[in-house]
Length: 437
Image 1: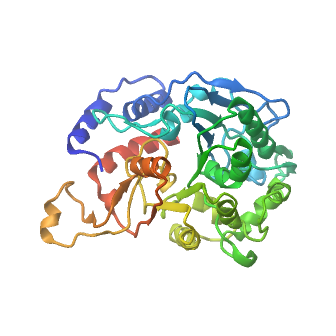
Image 2: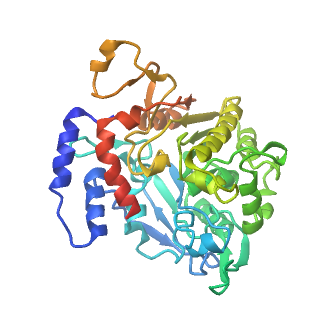
Image 3: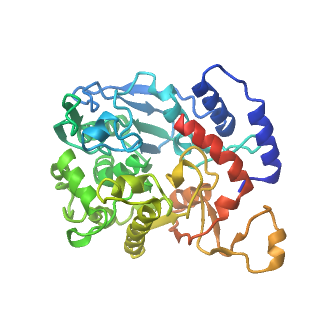
């Protein structure tokens, strides 16, 4: 929820933003107003021989060194690809980020600068609403850009043929695993003594967080370790069946995953969701968490649209909710697994709860229609929903999950709280325009 005093100030701040000539500059200016400038760290670029992007160009990752004993190992997200249409860009939104590689100034560009409050060490808030420092403020960072289309763990050179027979074949290097493994070894040498380690990422980077955690944590050997998967769930497919099984079969073949995942003790190749439980069993003192929205209409499209014909949005979201419920049911049984699952947010199609800003990234187990007539006069105006249990914001969740080892298990019921929030109606279109621009 956005404070009353902030809403009017936000409108003024955006109205007074300078009007550069180029649309993308204006959008970045608007986001700069909203998110208080992102980060301006002195990043160290690391290039390791033998690491490459999907197009064969040199892979680069970036490091921030501080005096902190803690390390954030961050996997960037950005879609996925497994055939000609998705790897060439023909599939549009259902494709992969950075098909042309990683520029030397990548960390000064929009995504890396603005996208993650966890990387920036603060929830930026809004004009006249101060930044809120997060528990990751001041930490060392290993930032893994994404350019291989394989959630950072592929291990295959493949040639994709244009199904229309129009364009020449596309050679693509799903080299994410080599890039990740090389960065892990480098990080162990650079940070030999780690107190707290947080392995996290959003979207495809969230999937990488779960898929690569065993390797990252096992090599870096921190004193305390945490996994936070934001909106890249590895859903269960028991017995080789389930709504996500066609996706898992496709990426296993296209990305060459079995040589990587076969190294994981207890991994079931017929049930990728086994990754969630095996890491909890292997590292019982570690803390694990999944966060994502029940109405995510981004990752859900990747999961089902290319594998089931004729799906409309309600069906895609129903599939997603079914898979999510199975995941939550399994995680609920583990004392070292948390989940923080809000219903929806009108930013980025309800995809990712830790990007750009934590506005709307809150969860309440008993979010219900207001019980009494007088509650409709409470702030904010126009809200017909109210939280009747603990109202937990993302900043608080992170502070207590990492700082106090507290377990949260919240799956919000269907509700229109964010949809009705008048502040969200102002902020969401601006942020969405910037993300799309």
